[in-house]
Figure (cartoon, rainbow, N blue to C red):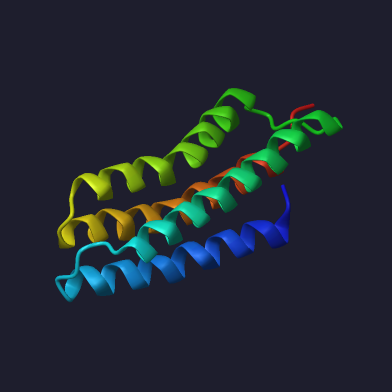
Length: 121
């Protein structure tokens, strides 16, 4: 997987998590800018997943390809699902949903990196 892209995705997710959780603590509903921010983060995660999928064809497959594929699907779907749920909840809880999703995404990226580093023989 791409190290700088993974770091950028993790940093962006953590910055957005702090922002969303602060807005939830201040009793603010998700704004249009908040929803756009999570959509941009979801696009960044989709690029990361695309790079990981392309990396599967370079000859160095992870030892557990099925688990890797599951994490790829979860990573690419997590942001859009959080966006959908936040739009359904136009209160402070929508920002809480976005904040928690942004805290989970770095964990998924780190796990992808961990699985990708263990190659099968």
